[in-house]
Length: 104
Length: 289
Image 1 (cartoon, rainbow over the protein chains, first blue to last red):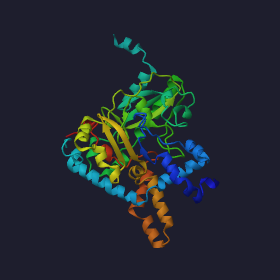
Image 2 (tube, rainbow over the protein chains, first blue to last red):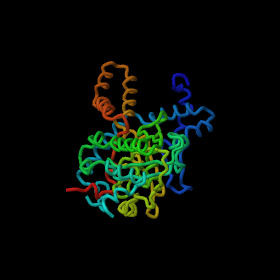
Image 3 (cartoon, rainbow over the protein chains, first blue to last red):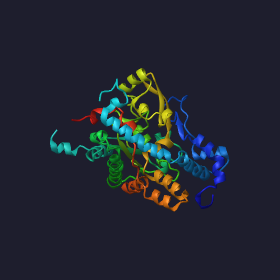
Image 4 (cartoon, each protein chain N blue to C red):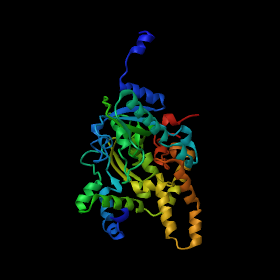
């Protein structure tokens, strides 16, 4: 891994598998869930052992893949989302998300 | 008991630290057993930061003010609601342990390591120290105050651990009622994973039974204008072949705001609070005149 980054070929080959195993989208990750429901992601070391590559390469691919998961458009959607949610709350308080059960 | 004899009563190091923490502005404080971090991955446990660590002392506080939650402009919380103050208090207490009691102490850095992961999970520490419990939305919630920031340090000083709270602060009774009627909760309703948000999950018998969390999308919201946003913008700028367009991108509001944001704080700063804004836990402290 020269200069601390992986080759684009190496990245393309492993990124989907690493994202899946590391749980980029976590499903039932928290430790307080029942043992039969809990599905924690794998550590970099565990993924390296399964894929037969070294831990540093896994870490590098994971970090890049996590950042590239969404396009920059998602960052602009985030601004719209927050402006709306904040504005709605200012206008309606907690009832902005449930009109029946929570007072303003 | 006279005042003079009261002064002679010795307090334990733990009690002394809790008193100092509360005087220093913490809302809650507690101790976790350094050996109890079994849910943390290897190399991310207190002993990995401080070999021989016996205890982890946790402080919580610096929560956004009631007015912050009411403001129609969410952007101000980026610089008024940060973990710096509570982290500074934690480091001060860590110094106190070394100077007064003569035991090693290492503060948990609030940022991330080279793998973009916490050195040690402060959230897990807060749970194990009895300060709060994990929520459906993610943040550790204190049953009395709700959302707040936490900081912690590991030490070789042995202290009696508090252990995790017996009852979970999440879901709140209002959320259970809403789930039973509408099949959603305030946080899930605000940021639903199946409609472009970050959170999914299910309650069963008044407890969290399942949870999904899109942390990549959450990153785009929580670190909207920070290091991840800077990387996304820089990638786009360097990929732009037209000089004029490149100039527009460099001087754009998004890139400028990102650069300002990076200068505001050198550690963690949150830029999205929407799931916590609607959380009923601790709402009594957020409702003023």
